Image (cartoon, rainbow, N blue to C red; front, side, top):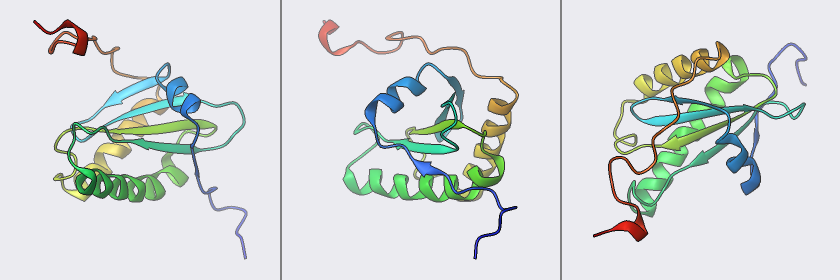
Length: 135
């Protein structure tokens, strides 16, 4: 039995072009992750997770993905932006963070995104040299 008053379950983003398109959306940074939110037309609430190899080995990255998936499953039905793509990008130290603290941070990030208050665009290459520019 499905209850029509319950929020719809978010779906998974699987195509690379959708992840790339989310970069042009709203960006809200938190200590354990960065949330990207972008309108997707009428496709409903969708989510994606990205963890780079800089975060750690496969075991660490998979643990972080599992934690993010649980956070998103819990938060998006009630707090997610309707007809938006939500991308979580893992940050260093995110796997060690307290789950309740990360849940509160995600709620705050979703609230800021709903208000249209994103963080300023990131500055490319200001802190570290890019691969081809090492001296």
